[in-house]
Amino acid sequence: LARSFVGGVGIQPSLLGLAVGFGLTFILFVMRALGGGDVKLLAAVGAWIGPIPVLGVFAVAAIIGMVIVIAQAIAQGRLTTLLQNSFVLTLALAQANQAGVDHIVEMGIGSKSVRKPLPYAIPVLAATVIVLVYLNR
Image (cartoon, rainbow, N blue to C red; front, top):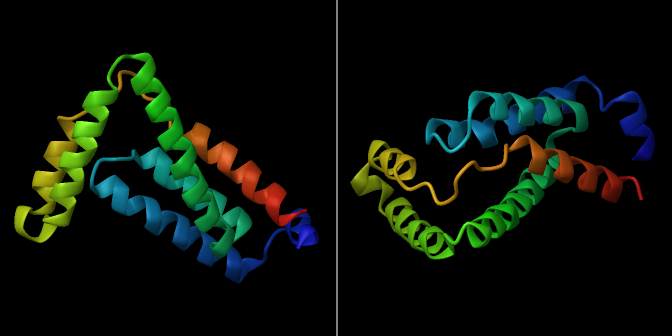
């Protein structure tokens, strides 16, 4: 597997990785949780490493991002706000069929839990390095 990352993953895995990276983040883009650049970034990472590893990058980036947001909320004295907003958005997502996606998007926009959030590229970079090190060990 280590050799595959030196010379690339091939056309078919690259296209599948691009589609997986794009698809995972496009859903979040529609909900306004991520920007268009974030969608392109994970699509590019998927094209580079393939479909299965990009799933790992997405999952690890989510965990790293969660840790960063919790640390920011604590540092800014907004942990209670973060927990309340997370609870409310979780309930709204559970009722998405009744509430509608537009309602959930508006709730997300109005419930920022931290000031100046870290760009998504930072967790994606860290996650990509972690996944590649893991795969090449």
